Amino acid sequence: MLKPSPAYSHLAAATDEAVMPPIFQAPLSRLWGRTVEIANFHIPRVIPKGEGKFLIQYRFSTVDEHGHQPRIFFGRLLSPSEMIPAYAKEPNAFFVANIRLVVPVFPFDPKIKTLAQFFDPAPGPGLLQPLTQTLGLNGTAQVVKVDVLGYRLERRGILNISVSEHGRTLSLVAKLVRSEKAAGLFEQLRTLEENGFGASSKENIRVPHPVTATSEGVLWLEAIADSSLHDLIETERFIPGCRSAGLALQKLHSAKLQNLSLYTIEEALSELKDLAFETARIYPALQENVHEVWKKLESSRPAMEEKEFAPLHRDFYDKQLLAGSNRTTLLDTDALSRGDPAQDVGNFLAHLILRGKQHSLPEKIVGQARTNFLEAYHPSKSPMTGKNFQKRTTWWEAASLLRLACLYSLRPRWKKLAIPLLEQSKKTPRGESNA
Image (cartoon, rainbow, N blue to C red; front, side):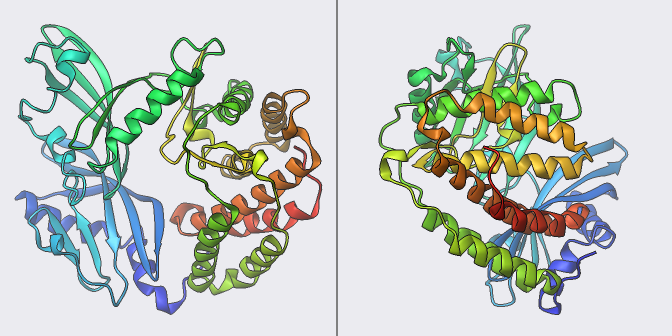
């Protein structure tokens, strides 16, 4: 097990799955005015924010006279010099002084004000008002169920909403973002639909249909019941699903999208360097491997010409695809940019290696998944089959493996993967790409 440096003792304490449950139990019992027990406590994600600051996701169940209730909280772990945010003194947050951890009590979020409205027992009439014209509701609709699909403190919440009106029930997705972002994301999805990613796409590769966006930061989307490619990993549908992933990515990279901001290799390297070097400071045992991988990546950075740039997803992996029986849905295009398409390919391949280790998949299965993805991605006579593209894919795969090694070293249940992923990253740039 990796041991953090004494300088990161606050991180060690805040990510100790044995220590944290009682620390949550006392303030929640006080805030809610009843005795609350904590069960099934675990920490799925730890997100470094630089200079000793972290976001930590806590998942658990509270147990009381009402039964088991699943919870998702995020805590902000402050650095020793960081100011305590004002909301730490709010009645719907608590502060653990000895480790400088601020925990907003979900659904309170200091930056996403609309989140709490969806969990109000009697939500205001304006919550569903934007849907009256677009979906034909007449103003009497009510929210009957809310499921959390994803959440990140102060950044976004993704909720599956069941709405009922006069016996009619429909499901929608509400994507909650900062108020200034919703309209831009709505227009981006509309643009993708107009460029071949609509429901009538002949290849059945699409994005979720945007219903409407509000000035408060709610982007309403159609709900799609298909399973993610990640959920199919241990099923017979996974390898064909990787082929669908290759087709979807090729379609995105070939799309004629205008006015995308440029994402350069210099930006990617800067972000990766910050993450890698902080990980080396957190875990002295990883320092030598991290620095070795970083130096090799930095010295072998690929070159490319502007004519090779393409629309870039920037976070393309198995959780970003819904793989239905007759359609593929591309998710989370928020960071869509123009850049090196090999980045998306390399990132997907690195995640296949990660999933193989997480799920103890046979090498044959991982190899078949990789082959299916790459064969579907590469069309004949494409510039994306050239040697330069192959070298760039190999480089991005190694860079993604380094990033994953650093991120997963912070997740209590997956620390053991850090060294194998670093070792794989060291090997990747030395050999020829299989792309």
